[in-house]
Length: 429
Ligand code: MN
Image (cartoon, rainbow, N blue to C red; front, side, top):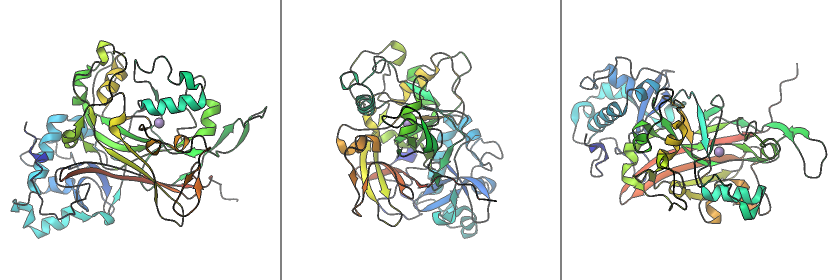
């Protein structure tokens, strides 16, 4: 099926600036609450949210085979389950409806008023009900930096790392959308030189700059997904901040890996950008340093050129960009990740979230966590209000952005932004 929605020459009767993340070539999917407190599935063009439930109800999708209430739901799981053919038909139809030359909705003011909302009048929700969350560890630079700091600079990468995309199973109950504040976690740590662990607020709260892909129902129990078919089961991508408590992590992670250091919160950007929209930005990843086993031999370039940035904004300050990285630095690509995840027959469902792992680049300003940027706190980062950061302080806001650009075409993810509050203290009775 031709993907005419990506035509860079196309423009929309909804106006937007050249530097928007959401031109008519993007057409991401999300879920939002309108000012009338109606929850609906939607898309976005420029600074406007578009109610797909209302569009469907008013007959604008009558020529697309969809179940009657496909978009009148509070998650995208059913739509994603319908598969790639439906995603493309719907994205193409939305592109047509909002094409500059198409008058059917453009010239119908009463329909427009029921369908289009300024972004500042809607509240974005989690786009999917996330059944399972897995977090990979696919940046060689990140794994090398962490291995160097925590274990042994001479053997920073563990022996399995260049042979498989390693991962752990995370927790979906604490995945939150942008703009929800989180509390500094408390837990057990072992201070340097101490003989007994102590309990208290984490002193080393950190972000992890990641992206994540969202799957459809990929396979049944026992059936692996072949690496060169894996992309057919990936709906799209979001930005992920995998909040981490480094002091809790250091004491708890041997032998079973991260637990309470990671599962207090992970936040995602609210619009899922489809792989179709990212197609113009496909690129090759880093060169393989070791041959891979056949089941991981992906023939296609399954990486994408996505610029990523992280800002820290103190409570009464302006943002400082502390990191600039790129998704293309990842050593293991999304096809290899999904093939590896399912090679033993583990089933993957609609709405599962697969994190990339922290995306660090080769230069010191491209490291995707404060742990690496401040090198365990040895080299504090200067903010533009004159203060320093080794890790994240109470009332700091961490904002991550992602966008692709090529010539005049820009496709973005918007941002994920959350504020760290002090520890939770129950009200005294
Ligand atoms: Mn992570």
